[in-house]
Length: 110
Length: 240
Ligand code: SF4
Ligand code: SF4
Ligand code: FES
Image 1 (cartoon, rainbow over the protein chains, first blue to last red):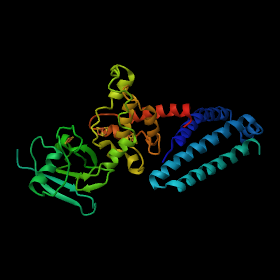
Image 2 (image 1 turned 45 degrees about the vertical axis):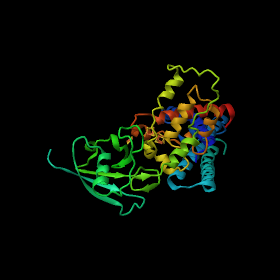
Image 3 (image 1 turned 60 degrees about the vertical axis):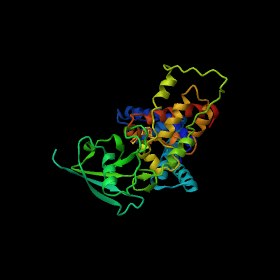
Image 4 (image 1 turned 90 degrees about the horizontal axis):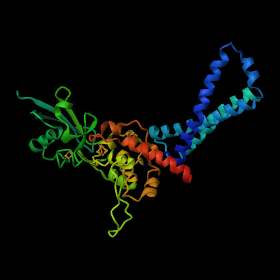
């Protein structure tokens, strides 16, 4: 079911996400300390190429990682195979990516 | 000891429905699950089919599900598994049932071969015998898995085997790992290709049922983790 390629892709995206998750949590805790408002946060993220890259990478990695995981679950628990399974994987990936990418776009450049 | 009986419920396949038969078996000291099955076959129903050979945990032919748990029946005391005075004995999980307690082990052994669980020699009889250093880390890794007796208890315990037909399973992959670490084996590339194919080591979820249930106290899960590490390294080297 799970090819070595997908397996490696899932491992690599996990490694990529580890520091991003940590950074996300730390910045969040740090930022709320002084009672930051939404507008203030957006003021810092808007137009910031750094935050675009940070959360863009995060969304890309998470959507790949999650889609591969769900694909495995669906194959093992629902017996989905072959083309149907691959379609499911791609759709999940695209869906997750679009959801995340929209959010990133909204807080950085929109 | 007062006369006591064991209620042995035997699931007789391949028809799973209505195939549970209850037998009253006299209890005695030091009785194994295999003794219970044998008593039924010798005294009540000579048509009851099951496998065994050595009766001492060496041949790997007597494995069955005992109260839903895969075990060597020859090395399992009935007193350890009785619930009240009842025990349920069924054919090994994850393999097609031939009749009663006998399963078709072809898939199990075919996967053993598919995982390249065979010797890959490179020397001829003219060459000197390869030196084995018993203290080298590779030999230690190999030794950890060589005592496997192909009983398929781990194969029956593995949920990934149940849900993924192609998955090679813990025993076959563990054998691949022992060979990968064997100085006398020359099949590294073949083994790595075999264990990263469609049913390869990457499918293992590392939940460790194989290690928990192996009656030989082997650790296929860690062997598979070793295969994953080596496969990942070769993936980066060769891009596949
Ligand atoms: S650790 Fe891997 S091989 Fe062992 S039971 Fe779990 S999935 Fe199967
Ligand atoms: S690893 Fe253990 S449980 Fe699995 S086949 Fe070998 S001896 Fe049996
Ligand atoms: S009869 Fe040989 S292992 Fe049980």
